[in-house]
Amino acid sequence: MIRLIREHNTLNGLRFSVAEFLVTLAIVVGFAIYFARAGVIALAIALLGIGANCFV
Image (cartoon, rainbow, N blue to C red; front, side, top):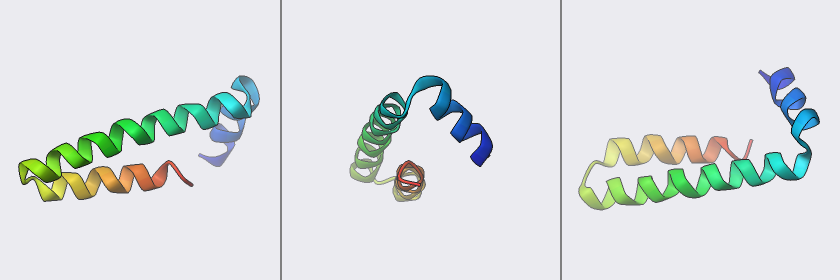
């Protein structure tokens, strides 16, 4: 998986890859907040885990 991420960064450039992950993070956190307010806590926690993965 790390090899694929590095290849992706090489092909698209580091700035694009960082922007891509930040957009993904914003969308996922938005959905997590929505589901937390709707009372679906398990899904909100799962989405926050996906968001945390964007930092790795």
